[in-house]
Image (cartoon, rainbow over all chains, first blue to last red):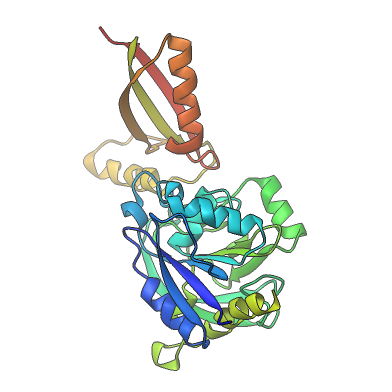
Length: 223
Length: 84
């Protein structure tokens, strides 16, 4: 049976086709899932792509999390299914309570669009299991609200439980403890601000994102 | 009973407010030299029908906690006013 990765589309999502390309590059199927449907169409993994769901009204992710599809995503995540949120998708997952913390406006109040160097801090997650621990990867960032924050107790918990999956080498946005990505307790839900789908070919300036999609797909195969 | 509601959403103390800081840095150029601690929030107004003020307030606070604010970074300040 062919592996199928579902890519959720909200009104205002704009990275879904790039994510589909990155998924198909792994030799598996990519399926767009409309946010108004409450079914995941039997997909084996879910990616919530970047963009500006619902125009980021109220707060990024605040309205998207009430979309019918999010009930299904939450249930899928609770059952251990692999779920990855990229950029706006990360914001949506924190608003939905599937990941801890929140993303606030960048320190310096600038929209950031550049290449970022990330250090792989944990290879124990669905998105990083095929990466080398401590490796530095080059992945683009493209966000205004990417400044990760959480209370001191949550931060300590993330640190102790090895749930910080990526840190910025040079913190671009003020994120606490240089955090670029985190995972949940079950390690099957991962959120990150950088865009691995934009780093899937040397022609794009980096192919460091490929191993992340390989990780995601192999997490499905492993079951 | 119908109430007019104003919810002010503020960033929690200690949460960096880059918009507020930017405004604060700009005001001296207009000659205002004594303005400090600028914080930018949001104001949301709506109307609610409820049996009494306590019930209205409980509903608004529930709404604030679950939707209008992100409790990780924001607090809500609620004002209710009975409408004629």
